[in-house]
Length: 253
Image 1 (cartoon, one colour):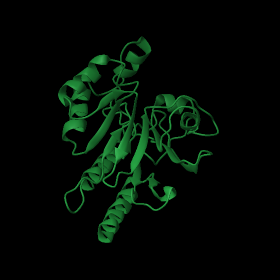
Image 2: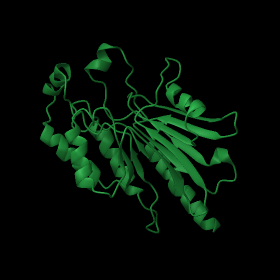
Image 3: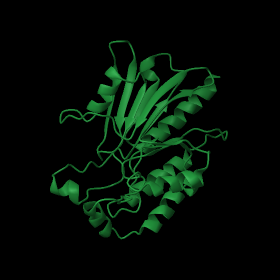
Image 4: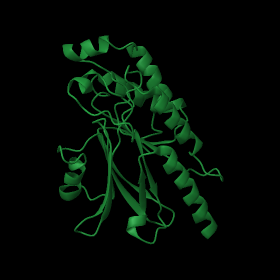
């Protein structure tokens, strides 16, 4: 589950949607045999963490949540929310005041990879199948015609991955296609949980209602590349499909 920018504590955080999705990630964290089933990636911007410039500090002054409370909420999200984390990114908001990322790294210890902006890694399954993941707070490049322009640019010229994931822009999109080199890739941007704030309203940005977290269901035993990754903008629907697929594959053994 690629968890879009949480912005916990922000006045614009969609708390009800976030709580519902957290409950889903907890419910499907393990299968009926107690084995790990659903793991999560944090795309960054866990909190607003306003700092540095007078304009940004003026935005912070409009927030009802103190810096200390932001820290407590972030700690809860990391340690006590019940989510089984795999990788945690620090986005631009997390890095505005470096004390925030240092604080989280300190309480995390070495139990979870926590990195600035992007992480590239492989998922290796028991049957030796590998899925390469390019997770970034955002990929370079933008277009009014394609929300995944940066990810496509990355797939064409930079990183040879199977899955490309971003957040940052508070909108969502999913794309699944075959490349000229034969790779079948999946690209997605997670919308996150910061619902329309003053900046978005003033500049006329659409307030997307779905895709806060994007779920990638990976089937390492799929007979074809196009069946290996299925993507869902609705977390609950995707989790139900994941459970069904796990049970189906277990019966086939």
